[in-house]
Image 1 (cartoon, helix red, strand yellow):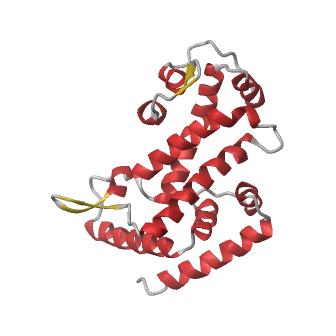
Image 2: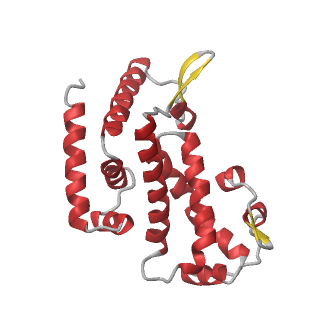
Length: 220
């Protein structure tokens, strides 16, 4: 899985995240609810930490891919998120759900990437190679062997148009739009993740939606 492929071995004192991720769970951790796993991990139980990680690793990678549309950056965000979780798990006080806390970390890291991208005016989903321009998002798309070529072309054009429209949003607008429409989160949850109110998230989503509609209205 991604956790085994992407994480690097980072040493913190006498323990390493690499060690926590390199061993599959056998039966060292009994059945626990999430709160018990968190408390065990806070006390240094590496197996409990790994179980927490495996509960959320695909969600974090998915949200990073949805927000950034770049496999390389998504992997960086994925790694940075769980390193930050590992370093700061002791500070989690159960005043919000672990899911919200984790998504807040991942989303803030994604926002930083989006803001830096705006400054550098990058288009990270596109790479120039010796064979020409390549869309690296294709690495994460399962190709249907018997797809209709016309429909493939239409889908590709629509995808390009959506990507361009998303790039025109502010980092915060894009994040709210993606969390609502790709992650299916409620506005209240989005507000909690971004450290703002449900009403502010709603207003941000409205602005993003209006911009997206204006960008896509000419697409036939």
